[in-house]
Length: 251
Image 1 (cartoon, rainbow, N blue to C red):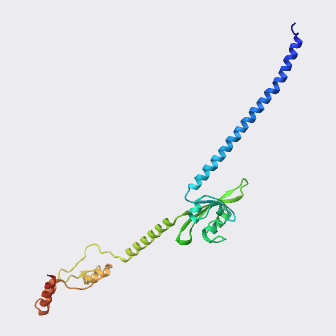
Image 2 (cartoon, rainbow, N blue to C red; image 1 turned 45 degrees about the horizontal axis):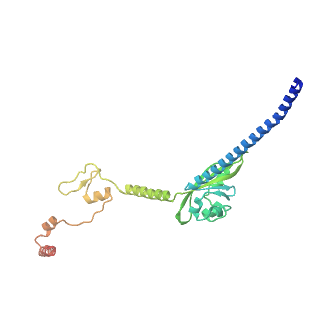
Image 3 (spheres, one colour; image 1 turned 180 degrees about the horizontal axis):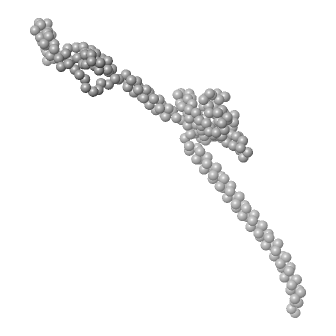
C-alpha cells in the first residue's frame, strides 16, 4: 500500500532537517581545517623569514645592533664577535659605549646624544683603542604613535680608509710645500758671452750662480774643471806630480 502525499511530504521535511545540520558541520569542519592550514603556513613563513633575516644581518660585515635610548644593546648581529671577541648573547644588556670605548657614558664624539635631539640619522668617525677608526651611525626607531623608542646602531671599521686619507693629505701637503719652495726659471736669459753674467729683469748683471740661487732652490758649491786646472796650474811641479800620482792609482 503506497504512502499518501501528506506522509511523503512529512518524510521529505524531516530529511531536510537532518541534512541541513550535517552540511553546516561539514562547512565548519572545512573552515577549521583551512584556518589550521593557514596558521601553519603563516608560522612557517614567520620562521623562515626570521631565520633568513638573521642570516642576512649576520652576513653583513658591519656591527649592527638595536639599542634603547640609554644605549643598552637589545639585539645584535654576529659581527660583534669579530669586532670585540665577545659572544652575541653576552653583549645583550651591555651598553654600546662599553664595547667601543670601555665607558658607561657617551664620549664627546658619540653621535647618539645628537640623534636624541634631532631625531634623525647621525654619524661620526671615532678613534678607538689600538689606532682603529670606526664610523658609527645611529638611526631612530619610532612606534605607531611617532614616539622614538629605540635606535639602530651601526659600526663600520674604516681604519684603512682613514690611513689612506691621511697619507694622501701628507702627500698633498708635501707637494704644496715643494711648490712654494721651488721657483722655476723660464724664458730667455740674457747672458754675457765672455764673463757669463746674467742680466736680470731690472737690467743688472749678476753672476750666474747668484742669479740661479735667487730664482730657484738650487745651491752652488765651487770647484774647478780639469781644463781650467790645466790652464792655471799646468806648469806647476806640484800639479804635475799630483796628476802623475792620480794616474798611477787609477791603473
